[in-house]
Amino acid sequence: MTGRVNSTAWSIFSPGEALFLGGEGGEDEQNWVDVTYHFAARPNEFAMTVGNISGISKQGWDYLWVKHGEKVVGDRVLQVPEAAYVEQVYHGGNFNVLGIS
Image (tube, rainbow, N blue to C red; front, top):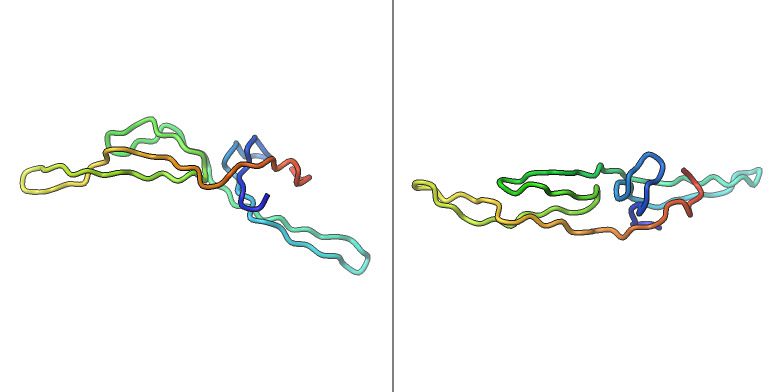
């Protein structure tokens, strides 16, 4: 599950917001097992606008990049957004198999 995002709602997070970074653990003197899980979180974003491009939505760990073109205004050349792309960086996984909530 390491390097995956939650594919369904999990704990307080909507799909795509929680990234599992891995876990570590060990036994103590009474043979109790301690496990520490590591997560990172980013909120999903909806109805974003970049320049004149609107309606952009992405899950928290997706990557948004913008292709720019040039527009001449007076004696200046400006960079203007022409297209916006959302790329999936991490695959989804069922965090319920971790046995925590």
